[in-house]
Length: 415
Figure 1 (cartoon, rainbow, N blue to C red):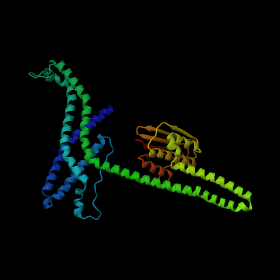
Figure 2 (figure 1 turned 90 degrees about the horizontal axis):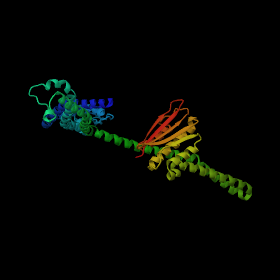
Figure 3 (figure 1 turned 90 degrees about the vertical axis):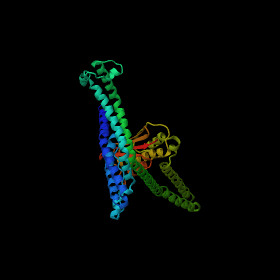
Figure 4 (figure 1 turned 60 degrees about the horizontal axis):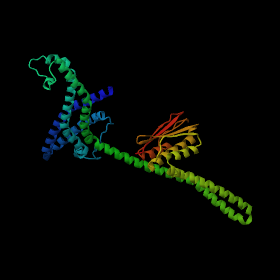
């Protein structure tokens, strides 16, 4: 109840204060626009137009502050185009005129005026109904005794008299108090919707474009890091074993004629090395595209990861079904890398992995009772996980104080 009342008061303040502000802004901007256009042919109008645009920007910034409160959204301010470096004085003077957002600010200051009038009237009327209705028993003692005064209940056929009038007006006031909050909220959304479209729409679009560009760059960085790590692992493992295998087979070939028993032993060593190499290649392939993930989904794939970990893992998968390949691969990769880091660096005795779905988001939580100190700074293993998650619009949160415990939360949109 308290939060509803606070919301109604905040919405009402926005509509009431916005009305005189809209009047002042409309008058100032119309005068500046007409004067600027009318005198532009003699260049006097140029600084007038620039000044008008800057005034419109001030009104727009004030409106953006209100929008953040009434829409319960973070404040968004567009980036206004700066003058080119080394530009002359005239170019710097007219720079506001080259920004499309400046003209949108001016358009908002003009178009907002009639909407502010309508929403102001709505707020006043729908506040007046409950206030006048509920307080009628106080002032009705006077109005009901005025000679010749005809009350609304009598005109509607409800009868006459103070008690009848009081009951009617109190009931009307209660009804007005019930419908007033949604009506006022609707008026707020109508006016705030215009402000959001003209004053923050371009900024929100630019922010989304920047997020997509950042996600693409993160995907490229994560892929490059994965390829470098794969190349290093192949060079340090299977490649070295294959070189050793080739040398063993060459030695066995030379020994075959002179010492068949020694050749037999060398061939046995080569067979063992071949099996070990195959095991390493299978392990590497699981990190790229594990067959169990493609065939049986996340629960089975995560269970396989938990079973291979050298630290006991408590696995709790609370979601079933299949998701997009990019989502499943990302979840698998995050779990695989995190369990590897836990086994190598955490000195933990137990690790927990929980996967659940909340709405359209997969929530992955990995914790351990190790020494802590993990973070996502550049150059650390978790930075690659953050990049991988940003590539699918996900987020990574790490809580790992020195001394532990460590909790890693990955949120991945799953549509």
